[in-house]
Length: 326
Image 1 (cartoon, helix red, strand yellow):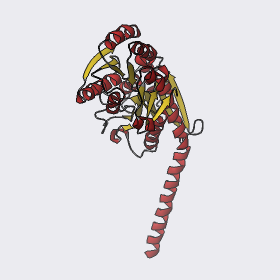
Image 2 (cartoon, helix red, strand yellow):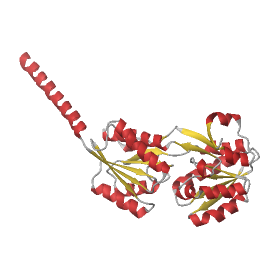
Image 3 (cartoon, helix red, strand yellow):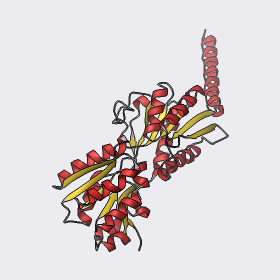
Image 4 (cartoon, helix red, strand yellow):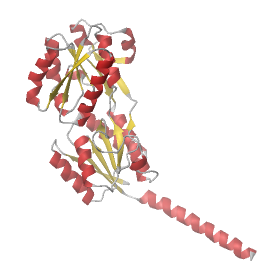
């Protein structure tokens, strides 16, 4: 009887080891198909995508070896986003990476089963993609590119203490700039300043609305989306001609913004890749994984613009900022 028990235990142990070995072997040999959908070619979004791919490689998921990436660009058309999402569903992708709000919304509409990771979105909850940013409770999670709005508004007062009125110029077509504009309005009021809000919905509106806004305010704050990003040079030029400046939510110093806090989108993509690995390895599901935020944020200042306006950069900002035009 003792022999039988030992024999049974030994056989059970061997069987268990074989099952464990089979599990790891299958995991190693598994080939994952990941669909990547992006609304438009844009430096920040491209960097997020590349960071995602680079970090997955570091984590053992390499193109051609055990993963295939199918990248599709919607060229700014939401109907293309829908077609891309439906294609990924029909291909039964193991995971979808949706970069930007329209791409994420199309993917969310296309499937409730395939895990979806999102990035390049400021507030997934406000965009209707998750029940809450802390507990998504759906097949979607990912990372937010929310910039530090509170710090940006405080930055205005540091650069121009006499500021009384702050214009907020944002696109009404995207939930991300709308959410940031709402936060900015609150922070402007908290500082005892007056916010003046203005929206644009197409490029042809940018010049007349900016000219009207700059005549009423001391500084303009711009939450960035594809319209305001494309128009930043124009917005900055109008402000400078009126002896005012622009701060924004992305690093657009090269387009004439005077100051901004920039998120490192490559690092944001890497953070999203770490979530992907957890999902692919079935260590967790999107339902229980909170939206994550990057702490890799840097202050950028445009010395050329600030000097033209006779604005001296405070010493405490010089210590932490990357200053261009020196």
